[in-house]
Length: 243
Ligand code: SF4
Image 1 (cartoon, rainbow, N blue to C red):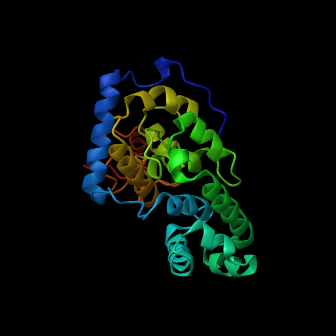
Image 2: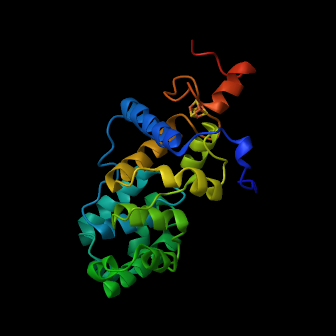
């Protein structure tokens, strides 16, 4: 990601706060129409499973993580105590499908130890800022993973500013491709509902995988009308006009 400063307002589209909110809601509706409702996008029986998933998914695809989680479920019932009793070489074998098994085995053991000592109830009583700080202190948990855990495992009103969200919102012309600008221009206008935010993150990730990737596949994208990036690409003939 480049070092892009916050754009002066004159360089961005002059959307009013209500205009941004209404565009965000339109984006959401169109993505729901494209991919269907995504209320259960992160399937997990309990918060510890979400923590494990957040560590295991790094540098790999969810399908492989699901395979590993199913194995851990069979072998340990995803119980931190049982997981900690598994010998490290055996645990590494189970994690192999998700890759980086030595590093991930060490990290999920540390996570299991931490989660067992703290306990979900105690963690749930922390403020969002304090809980985020504790999560970030765990090896392998960066800002995106911490926010995903806060949103899905602890149901906190946060947002995951990841690559998919930055690409989408900057290409649509609503902010620059930089977390600080996203925080300034988009975050205050996202609906407060946690369920809505969970679903919107899921939709943005799916859209990023299928359409708005590093090399966007604009043809067939439900957001092509009103997209700044596509408008420029159509004007230079790189993308066919959808008319
Ligand atoms: S039209 Fe292209 S650039 Fe715009 S949101 Fe869709 S895939 Fe991304």
